[in-house]
Each structure stands twice: as structure tokens, then as C-alpha cells.
Image 1 (tube, rainbow, N blue to C red):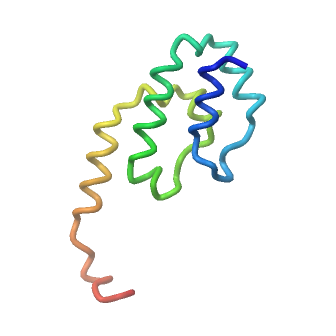
Image 2: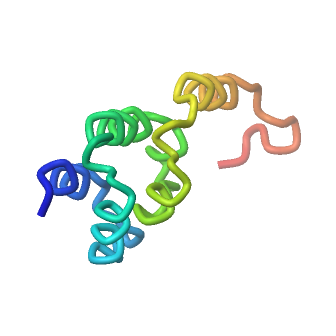
Image 3: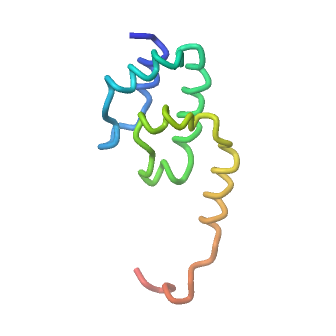
Length: 97
């Protein structure tokens, strides 16, 4: 198993969406992603800090690889999450627990 893939799989969040390891490895090899492993791993680590991922809405790893999501602009994602967190609550939901 390529070391970059092994690290990618190890750092992926351990949720129900972490599946299809054999298919992920197949895509990793077919697309020559070992050469991009540092960028892929950095992308996963950065996205793990976004509100969406912290709230448990990470994609399946196969989707992440197929869509090359490590190339997405992490700063824009983090800023969007911060803006949403800073919005005042809707008056309809104030005081509702």
C-alpha cells in the first residue's frame, strides 16, 4: 500500500462515511495520486477544521478523491462557516431550546 494512501486513510474521520477503502486505493493508484499525497493530506487536515466537517458532514473519501476536493479553497469554506456562526438567530427561534 502506498504510504501516502495509508496516511490519507488513517487521518480520515472515523464515521459511517469512511468506506470503500479498496475502491479508494484503486482510484489512488490509477490516478497517480501518490505524487499529490502531501497536498491531499493537507487538504483533509484543513477541511477537518471547517464547521461542516466538525458538524459531521464530511464527504465519503471516494467522493473526496473523485472530485479532487483537496483543491477547493479552504479559506472560503472556513470563512463561510464563521459567517454562518456569527449570524444572529432568527426571531422565530429566539428563546427556543
